[in-house]
Amino acid sequence: MPTLGRKKRLRERDHLEAAGHVCLLKDAFDFDSPSEIAALIQAEAVEAALALHLYRGGRLLLGHGIPFGIIFGGTDLNEDINQGEKHQVMGTVLGEARFAVAFTESMKAMARLQWPHAKGKIYVQSQGIATAPNTAFNWDAFLQRADIQQSTDNLHVFLLICGLRQVKDPLYLVDAFAEWHQEEPSVYMVIVGPEQTEKFVSEFLKAALNPVSHRPLPIARAPRLPLPHRRLKTDTRSHTFQSRPRLRPAAAFQSRVCVCFSATRSGTLVDPVFTREVKAKVKRATGVRLIPEMPQDDLHAVVKKCFALVNSSVSEGMSAAILEAMDLEVPVLARNIPGNAAVVTHEVTGLLFSDPQEFVQLAKRLISDPALQKELVANGRRYVRMYHSWQAERDTYQHLVRTLEGSPED
Image (cartoon, rainbow, N blue to C red):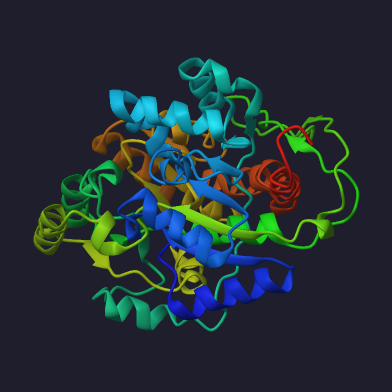
């Protein structure tokens, strides 16, 4: 979802301080050298840290003597892992980190294969999902701003939430969709961007640093994914757990936490040349619209009102937009890549396409088959509730954050 505004940042900071922590939200690109990180640690009396992205965020924490944990980003295992120098740095980061979190078992397996020395500290926790659409959101006004004049009774809006980055491939479906729109004027594709990583970091912090009970908390393993058939099994053996040593009460750990996360600013994430290319092509394409970022509750309202959520990324770690659409009871059409296939089972919790032509075929099928729509929506919502519990994610991160207290041997 979109990057958070100043007011949202202050709300998150207040929330964390109320939980007994002082939280510093920092952008990795704000720091040019290790000396700047050292100065921050000294000036703010930082005692522990968390980093999103093994390379982009984690490398900043090397050699400073404070305990830290990291969360793998999709970029770590889909892109940076293939670059020799970055691969070496990431291995060093894992060597110093107290823990590392992967979203899926496949991400964990890939990391363990690349860095065997870290296999004992990599945990799996899928993203927890919580949605809160703005109930006062004006859908008709949104359509007007997007220059969509069709009657809402016959309208089918396909929503693509993504940053204007090549890895998100926002132009992948544009030509095919424009051609389809010429045949069927009631279909539109709306691209909302840019999507930033800060939203996940902030929500992760809410989960990690809220007050918790004094009992030890379990670590969730990866969920069993639904079997590839039309009906989602209702046998809800969701997460299994591994026991952990008893730790001191969370209240005893009043840490200042510096969070380093990468590329949250639009100017840093978005390639200006590619952005111009996207805007120019969308402007020429009939039936395709590009909308600026918006507050999260408004975006959830847009997702709720659209016909289907689309993902066309070249690679993904775990798409929160897909999971949020499922939670909001909206059908999902996603590009058939490993990250998407890990959360979307074809014809069970959504539809997977391998090329733009197949996307159009599946989209037409979805429009013409209300029973399929209903089934995908019901299965998707059930899947998110079973395997992407906000409370399960909270329990895991609260436990892991407490391991940053004291020495590694404690």
